[in-house]
Length: 433
Image (cartoon, rainbow, N blue to C red; front, side, top):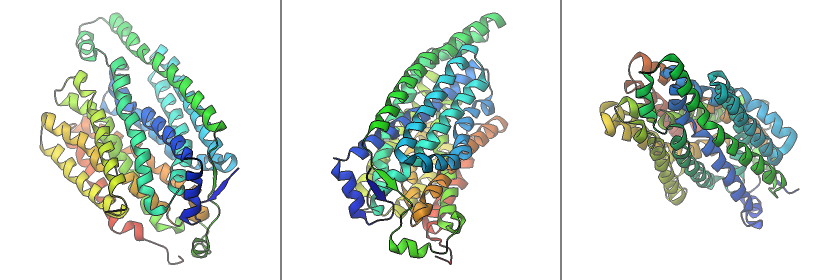
């Protein structure tokens, strides 16, 4: 099997991608499509399960918590899995684990048990942790480092196109006539109410059966594919010399700061996509309309990715893109707080534009020059995706205690830290380096 060094010069790595007619790029693109579809179903599951399982805001955002906390719990074990299986087989394992998570949704829906739904989401998050621990460094390394943000932007388009489709598809099934149902529930007896909610819960069974089949087929395709294996333990002479005295991943301050920035970023990205439907409803917009807001957020992200593909690194650097994104995020978050109604909700959706280039910029900056520490460094960044568990849950708590609009203040310090990482944090190196 072909091996590619993580830190060799750009030429050999690019040759691997081109020698197979960019087949590795297409396969990884398909995986990023799966990431997006599964991940952004949560934006519909939150209001859907809030109705079906009779939850408050805080309880409903446990959907995001259960899904994203898996990245924190399972990222290091994911690195162990990849060390044993390699990147390609590890991706297949991740897809199969996601299939198991989808399978749990069937008994959860049949019994309308919120705890089982959360377990299924945690297992899906576990599978995605394995997949992303492999796929993100893979696409970063498979070409020149200075254009890594461009390649990740291409993957981001695959991810967000799927993410834009997912809420529409599941929303059309799970939230069909939801506004009328909510009105009827208030006039029903307990027995009638339970029967209606059981019927509502059963709506997700067929979509998740289809998901299981697709995940298993894709796992087989990846397993039998000709994806080249990448050896991240090899280092070129410059990186090897710089890392001579390095014994721990904690000796790379730029990675640690990048991990914190990633934590805050994923938190605000998930908030923008997963809270906007419920926020629209709180602003008096019907669920039949609000279910499209997450798609608007993801379309805005796709626009941002295209901007990144065109401009990075030809016109702006990854660092510059990160600075601009952070400033734009602060402006839009404040605009959402200080306006009302449809305009306010629109600004939350437009945060997708601000968020689009943050992940593509942070990842290559954070894993730069890690050499043999690349796998564990990638695991740290995957662990940081747990920001999507913690920060939306804090938002849900504040939304219950204050109101859903003022709770968006939590976004401002997150974007400020991302701006700091773009300006100074990514330049931090230990003295030993």
